Amino acid sequence: ECPWTKQQSAADILFYLRTEMIEVEEVLRKQHKQPASSPKLAQELVGELGDVLFDALLLIRVCERDQAGVSLQKVCDSANRKLRRRCAYLFDGSGVSSMEDAEAVWQAAKKAERQEEAM
Image (cartoon, rainbow, N blue to C red; front, side, top):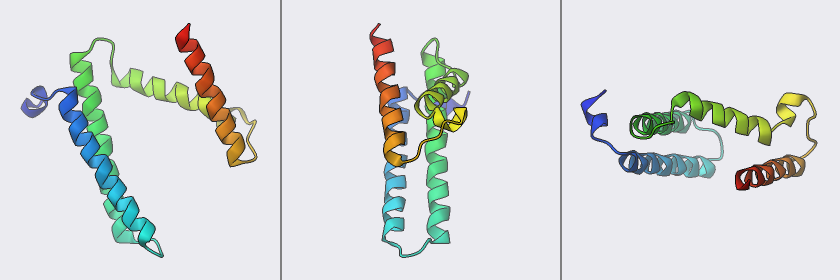
């Protein structure tokens, strides 16, 4: 393990992750002000999103080290299950006809998740 990473806690990495998210927000705000898509801003956004992904992966690594039961595979599996529950229409062919329908499916899935967690 990298000597720098060895010294980091999850809280340390969260600080960096928050900072990178702010930088993503700043680029998106700049893009919103542009009348047309800017290749320079797109490149900047790609770089910032890469930083967010890097820090998220680093956070998972630190949590793997410090907390039993956490792994990149488990995090990816969890995200996959959540996506398939909340956006089932993308995978089962049922489709939705509007943004409102998609939102209703999403909210129903979240409600069902909360009920399962309460049991």
